[in-house]
Amino acid sequence: MHLLADGEKVYALGRQVGHYDGTREDLFVIHFVTHYAWEFEHGGQVLMRSRYGLPTLPRPRLNKLRFKRDLKRTFDGLITKTEQATRLWEVVLEASRQPKGTLLVITTEALAEADRLKLQCTLIEPVPLTPLITQLITAIDGAVLLDPEGYCYSIGVILDGKASGHGTSTRGARYNSAVRYVESSPYPCLVIVVSEDGMVDVLTKENLAESRA
Image (tube, rainbow, N blue to C red; front, side, top):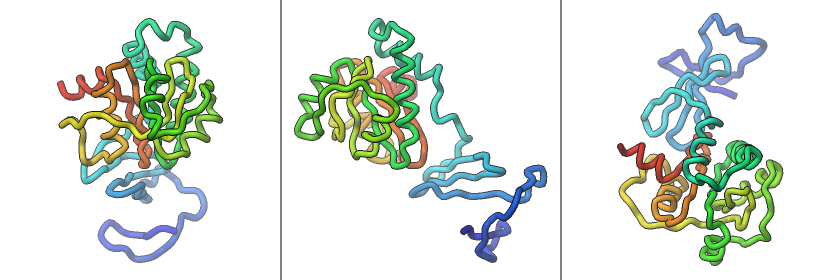
């Protein structure tokens, strides 16, 4: 059920019936995604997104080439096989579909970090992630901790990190905790932030430095 409006006033409740001819350009939809976030759509295509009053053009949720570039820059020499990058991409792609949002933390010291954070996470026997397993464990609150080989060591992780001035109040706790963790980590790490409104961010030390340049 939708509110029907003419651009100035709401005049009825209703829903679209039958096929819409997009060439008419007389039916637009505003979809409220979450708190202070909405999308402006036409014919099923998002034309604009707004978060906390800041409009932006739609962008792809994930860019495969950029993701693989970030992997190579962060874990130079550790991901030597195409299969490794492909497996991690499949995991990240599945995580990006989590409707409630999630965090994936890929770090060279996943085992040590799992042990360090053992009081604020659930330790598991290392298991190689698949899209199906990823779908199940990302439904649990907290971050998922894995290594560059795609092995998961803990779930439901509460990330820590030193507070910095590089977060943003418009992005919420999940994004800002990921920023703090990346900036504080002494190890190579890459964090994927999936927000409830569908936005996906890939955070590395290099990306954060470039965004502030």
